[in-house]
Structure formats: structure tokens, C-alpha cells
Image 1 (cartoon, rainbow, N blue to C red):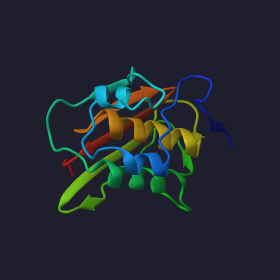
Image 2 (image 1 turned 120 degrees about the horizontal axis):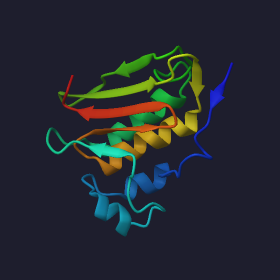
Image 3 (image 1 turned 180 degrees about the vertical axis):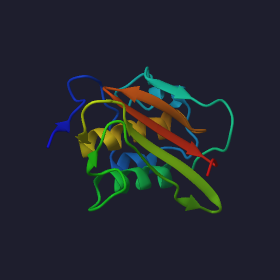
Image 4 (image 1 turned 90 degrees about the vertical axis):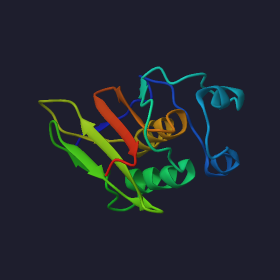
Length: 146
């Protein structure tokens, strides 16, 4: 079984449980930079310009569980080019989360840390949702679209 790690390929935005709680509910890219979270922008992020705004703390909790909990939605093996998706709801608002292995020939098991960090990056840099492609993986978060 292969495990991919994007650690060498990209910079990570790490938001610990304690620092995430201290962040404002609605945060913009400039506020993230001001908070000095170790990253000035999200170069791989394509942020949606309209749509529902996420409850970022709630969304981050779902991303962490999906990427690292026992039998979490995004854990385990991804066949080529498999997509895994989920749509949890909070106060009537559904949140699309997707993770796709973009490799057409090989399957992989994504590293939990990389999964959490890339989804968390989208959640905090793109409050209306967005997507990014990094190291052969596509990540998507879209509040209000399921």
C-alpha cells in the first residue's frame, strides 16, 4: 500500500484546535495573513466568489474527523481516479466535501495530516467554499451545495 505525503511538495497551514477556536467565524485571506498563521496566501486555492458562508469551526471539525477518525470518510485507499464525498449538515446548511485521487493509473492512501491541512486551508481561506489541486489530489469544500 502506498501512502502519499505532500510534506515535501507544499507548505502547510496548520491550525491547532486551540488556535482555530480563537479565529473569527468569518475570516478573509487578509485576516489570516494578519493572524500570522505562517502562510500569506493560498496559491493553490480557487475560492468561490458567491454562495453560502461556512461555519468554519464546524467545517474544520468535520474535515478532521473525515481525514483521521477510524473509518473516516476520507481515510483508506483511493483507486484511480476515485472521488470520495460527504455532505454533513449544520443548521439546515449542507456542506459538500470532496477528495479525489487524480492519478489515472495508481491508487493511493492519502496521509491524514495532508488531508486535514488542505481541507482546513480551503475552509479558512475560502469562506464561501473553493477547491484546490495539490500533488495529484483535488480537494473541494462547498457550503450550501448539497
